[in-house]
Image (cartoon, rainbow, N blue to C red; front, top):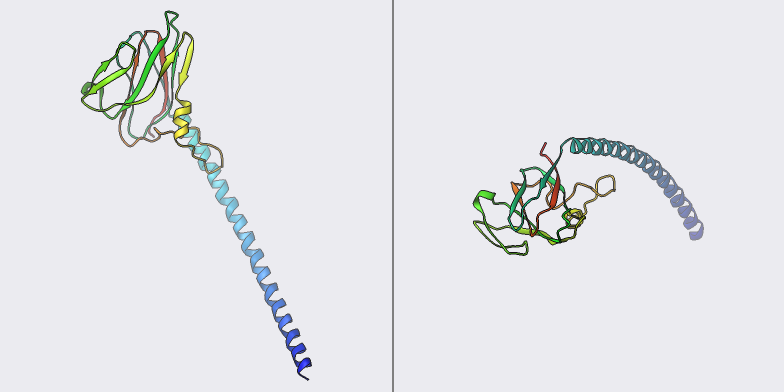
Length: 200
């Protein structure tokens, strides 16, 4: 007799588990469907926000330049105001008279408060009145170009919500206060072009 009773109990438990499993599967399907729908809505909103952000960025880009006619003198290039972002700085040496040695710095200190000492080789050797930080230094032969794309983008390589890299992500993105950029060449004949995103 105990065997029959165990068999009956087993059958009853099996039926109860089947009913429970069926009800769980049903609610799981509903939950998964709801989550998929929510995810589609969130993805659509992200795409729309990303498109608006890209449109806003492209309408706020400022392009500027400096035509260089100096040698071994520090040139104040441009300022990033609070909330602005630097996209790139490009240097193009066009003089056939020889190679240009250049030095590019940034600082929180305004040009009128700084005094620079420049060596004969186009390098800033000393600064008084505040600190400047060298971003890049190098040499350019005639018709050679250098830019900051690799340096700016290598510091942070942030992914967007849509999975791609953010082309406007850089160490100088949405700066919290005013940043000044300075440049010194050893030889005249290098044009400097910069692109920045103005604060909205």
